[in-house]
Amino acid sequence: MDGFSGYNQIRISEKDQAKTTFITPWGTYCYAVMPFGLKNAGATYQRAMTYIFHDLIHKIMESYVDDLLAKAKKCCDHPEVLRVILSRLIEYRVMLNPEKCVFGVTGGKLLGYIISS
Image 1: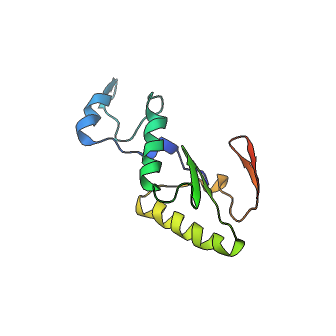
Image 2: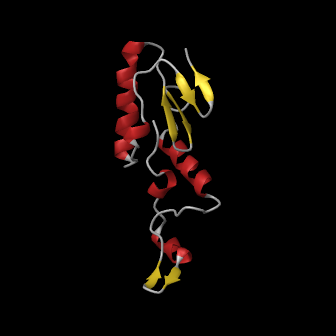
Image 3: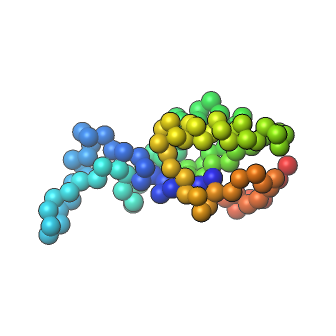
């Protein structure tokens, strides 16, 4: 599964939004979510994923920044694993990119590596 717009889903606390202020000919603005190009954006998003899935990582899933991998020992367990992961995504309002998500496969390529049983 692939997170939609990755770290752009991470909200910046209101007290820190002023630190992202920028001026344009149309007015003064600040970011409410993490903008592209911040040095710590990837690490912050990974920390958020670790917080959300702390009890599931290395058991029924793996997470690397915005890539999520659901895993089950038996095919019949896979729907329940997906239910747990997807319900957690809904709870924390994390969106997935449906065009990059694949479900029910026994192997494939992830981060340049071939994953199989």
